[in-house]
Every structure is written in structure tokens, then in C-alpha cells.
Length: 297
Image (cartoon, rainbow, N blue to C red):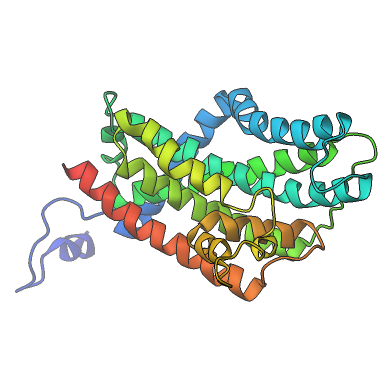
């Protein structure tokens, strides 16, 4: 009894604490909130899984169906006449289709959703009330989009590799160490691009985003051709198109996909990895700044 009483006597000169202190650190609370935000997005994805699958497959399927099935069937195969040339184009196209699918996941799952959340629904207000920094809410969106990008790559690759006319064959060689390291990196970078677009365009300007940003990135991103094939496009000896497209992040994503899924020529890996990391860091920096400004405005 004496010991218990003695233990309750405050030490002279020590400040007395009224009530209990924090039960966990800020870092622990932020990790819990981040996990809850990611879990929420995954639950929503599971509830709309068939919508996700259809959204992921429609464009890649149509690209492969038209270019690799219809064109060879009607005698207008791309890449030249004969199954060998058409198969060479198929080998180029299939990794490009995976790359463009990853990019569109970043745009659709982050940019379009964020434009709606910042719009009339104001759903973003529920997110930013989580017990974590504002920037962590944006990071959760990027990570969720990256997960969906990885799932899209897993779904699209086998579908795109089998949709072709008889005699046309995409020659794929899976380099697993590249797949494991580069595909998630590309998904994070494209998720960062989605964050930048989603925080830069008002909902009423989404059409402008697709017309002036997405379409140029898509057609000049090396989906239908490798980067080295642009060398003949010159003006006065200057490979102007091959130089200009280097500002397009999708060109590096598609070149990395060709390195990961084929044995064909591609841009050097010591160029691809640092540039994709640099684009990812740039997109996250701009996107997080824009996100904070939009939330606080």
C-alpha cells in the first residue's frame, strides 16, 4: 500500500501531465492512414473490377485487332509484305500497347477521378481529413494508380500477344529482372503524370487535356515504332523528330517495355532508368505542390 501511494506522489519540480499522452507517433499514424487510403481504393477497385478490366482491355485489344489481324487479312500489313515483316511489327507493337495501357491507367484512375473529386462532389474533402499530412493523400492516389497500372500490364500482355492473324507472331522474351524493376517504376511515373494532370486541369477542361496533352504523348510516344526508327526523319541533317520526342516520358516507358518483353533493339537501359526516375520525381514534385494548392484553395 505504501509503495503504491509513494509511486503516485509527483516528483518535486517535475511538470504534472493532465490526461494521457499520444498513444502513437505521427509517423505511425500516417502509416495507418496511408494503409487505410490504399485499402479504400482497392475495395472500390474490387467492387468495380469488371469495369476496370473492360476499361483496360478495350483500347489494347482494338489496336492489336486492327493492326495485327485486320490489316494482314486485307493485305495491308504494317511493316512490309510477308509474315516476317508483320511479325516484326507485332513484336514492336505489343510492348508499346502495354506501355500505353500503363499510361492510360495513370490518367484514368488518377487524373479523371481527381478532376471529379475536386469538382462538384468535393469528395477530396473526406480524404484530406485523414490523420496524415496532405501530401500523403496524394501519394496514396499515386500508389493506387501504380497498382492498377501493374494489374493492367499483367492483363494486357497475354491478350495483346495472342490477338493476331495467322502467320503473324509477336516474338516475346521475358526478362524478369527488368519486368520486376522497370514495370512498377514506370507505373509510379505514369501515376505521377496522372497526379499532375488531375491537379492542373479543371473538370470542364478535361477535353483540352486529352486533345493537347494525351494525344500528342500517345502518338509521339513510340507505341507503334521504336525510337531508333525515327532517325531518317531529318531536316538539314538534324534528326529533329528523334530529338523532340525525348521530352515525352512515354517514349522511355515504351522503350523500357521493349527491353523487358523482347530481345529487339531498344534505347540503352542506363538512359531509360534514370530518365524515368527523373520524370517520376518531377511529376511528383509538381503534382504534390498543385494538390496542396487545390486542397487549401
